[in-house]
Image (cartoon, rainbow, N blue to C red; front, side):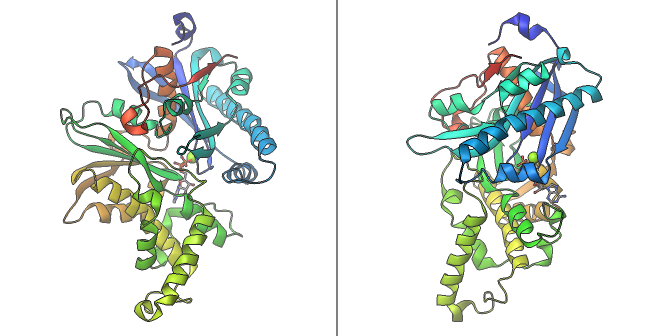
Length: 403
Ligand SMILES: Nc1ncnc2c1ncn2[C@@H]1O[C@H](COP(=O)(O)OP(=O)(O)O)[C@@H](O)[C@H]1O
Ligand SMILES: [Mg+2]
C-alpha cells in the first residue's frame, strides 16, 4: 500500500493496455470514488501502432537473434509512445498530470512461459520511463508476484470482472477475444462455486496471422468482420485435429500467448494434417485434397477453431447462463455468429451479448482492469485470484515507480 498523502493527490487512475494483437494502446481514465468502489469510466483513448512498431513487437514473440537489444530498445520506445498517448488523453480531457493518481501499466507482453521449473513472463514498456516522461506515478509489473507465488501470472482480469458482477443473480461469463481469448466464469451469488478464469486458446491471433500472410499487398491487418473467412468452408477434419491440441485440452489453471499460437504452430498442424489425410486418402477424398485445402478454407476453419475452443470451455463449466463478449474479436461478426451457433444448441442455452448490453465499452474493459489493479495496489487490496492463476496465496499485485 502507498501512503495516503501520495494517493490523496489527483482524482483519476489511468489504465494502460497493449494486448497481444499488437494493434495499439488502449487507455481508460477511471474514477473509483464516484460510485462506492465501482469504477466509472470517465474517458478513453486508443492509439494504433504503426506497422513498424507492430512488427517490432510481434518479431519478439518468438526466439530470434539479438533479442536483448531489440527487446530493451523497444521497452523504452513503447514507454515513449505510451507517454505520448497519455498526454493526448490528458489534453483531450483538459487535465494535467496532477489530476491523475497513478497509471496502471500492463505494458506489452512479448513472452509468457508460465509453466516448467523456471516460469517467467515479460511485459515491456518501461514503467520508470513512463513515470518520468509523464510526471505521473506508475504501477506496473502486475504479473510477477503472482508468478513468484507459483501462479501463472494470468489471467488477471477475472478479479476485476468479479467486482463488476458482484451482485449477479445468475451465472455469467465474460469472454475477452483479444489476440488470445480468455474467459471468466462468475457463478451466481450464493452458488458456493469459485470464480474461474483462463485463456481458452487463440482469439484473433491465428486469424490475423493467416489473413496477413495471404493479403500481403493489403493495408488491412485483420480479416474485417470475418468477410474473407465466411467465403470459405470449414474443413471438419482439420478443425478436429486443431481441437486435439495439448493446450486446448489441458486443465486450468492455464494461460498462453503468441509464443505458442503462431504461424509456425499452424503450419506444423497443416503439414501433419496433409500427411495424415494423404495416408487415408480414400476415406477423406471429398473433404481434403490439395485443391480443397486452400487458404480461405483454412481461415474459415481457424475462425471455427477460435469459436469452438471458447464455446467448449464455457459449456464444460455450466449448461446455461449469460455470456458477455468483449475485446476486438467482438467486431468480427462472423466469429460472433459462430460462437452463438455453438452456444445455443440442444445441450447449451446461453444468452450472448456484448458488454455494450451492460453499458460497458468492451474495447476498453481490459484497460479499465489495469486502472483497477493500480487502485488495488494503492489500497492494499488483494488483486489476484489463486483459483484462477494457481498462486499459493492471494496478494496485492504490482510495483510502483515514481516520476
Ligand atoms: N471489424 C473487425 N473485424 C474482425 N476483427 C476485428 C475487427 N476489429 C478488431 N478486430 C480484431 O481485434 C483485434 C484487436 O483486439 P484487442 O482486443 O485490442 O486485442 P488485444 O488485447 O490482443 O490487443 C485485431 O487485431 C483484430 O483481430
Ligand atoms: Mg489491442
